[in-house]
Amino acid sequence: MIITAEIISDLVVPLVSAILYMLMLLYFYIEQSSRRADNKLFMCFLASFIIFLLARPFQQCLEGGPQAVVLYTRMFVMFTLICPALLLVSNLQVDYAWSKRRKILIVFTGAMISLIYILLHDAAREAFFFSAEDLAFLPFELTFRTAHYAQLIGEMILLVIPTAYLLWKEYTNDAKKTKITFLSGVLLFGVLMVVGTLSAQWWIYYLGSLLCALLWVWVAFKEIQELKGKAALIKDELQLLVLGGDDSSKLKIEQALGELETYSRDNLKLYKVRVREVLCMLTDRTISAGGDTDELVSRNNTLVSEIQDSTDTRQIHNIISKEALELTNIISHETKNSHERIVKKAHEFITDNYQKDIGVEDIADSLNVSREHLMRLFKKLAGQTIKQYITCLRIEKSKELLRTKNITDTAFAVGFNNSNYFSTVFKKEVGMPPGQYQKSLLP
Image (cartoon, rainbow, N blue to C red):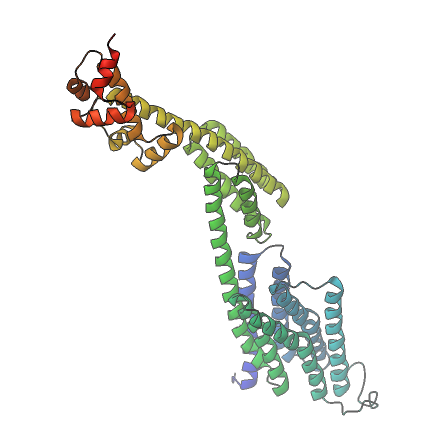
């Protein structure tokens, strides 16, 4: 078998293109299957274009009437499915959804264009419906080229002109790079169709459409990465909000959960996965904060089961929202108790060791907490710094000892290494020197 340019153009190129578009369709189905209209429309375009490509070699294997039937079917698919679906996807990409009436008008326009093409082409070849004589009243000669001009006008009206307008509009508005890239791919697809029609070199848009496919796959990949990144940030934000445990966080938690739903792209399965991840993460942090492990694990299992069985996004949102707020309250309560326990133990350590040369580091080490954390908690709950508390305790204890001991012995007994420094601190706290205080104790 001799491989000719015609075989490559009519058989090899369409088949290779169809296979690659099948892979892209599978990719979109796996990675982006959802209820979003633009995904459904784009997969409709892909499926229709695959049919259009695969029918080309089949068309070339036929002759006469059957060949014309396949050709007319392909053109009908082109103008009623491929071009309208791609145009509608382009509008949704720029966040502009057409009304149902406009959508019907687009499909109707495509159907009329395909009908005109079929009638003109059929008359030129005198196959099924008309002959050239039947349409002799037309002010132009009927040839196959005439049908191609009708095809060209349809491609311009349904794809090239509106897409060029959308691309210009988005470019002047500094739109996202992914939107510009997607629209550029659509415009390139339309332009290649026009070039192929004008030159009657159909392989041009069969082969050139692969460039568009690469652009679209890149856009899809970037969008998926962006959505995953935003979802991860939202989950981290939720964790911080819940751990914050204050009333001001409640509204922010509700907002973050709403954003998580948005960045799940209305994909119920994906939303369920992310909600379960958030629920397990928050449960784990609540247990770490001191919550009851058995109770929290049991609650988590029950809620995960409810989420799994649910088919309503709103219901799932309400489940995770309610649980997040309850876990916030538990963490807030447990955190407060934990902080109070730490400060209480710090008090006990100081009371037992005030007479020694102790500092913040010694207390923090004994409680197995960081120095900064202990200082922050103590100041917040006790109303004074650790150093101030130690000093006050030592002075109070020294007042009792000064009844029976001299100043130097008292200073060393309460943890001061220098009697002069003790006298300075005592005067500052009590308002008089230790000696004067002793005299005031005499009857």
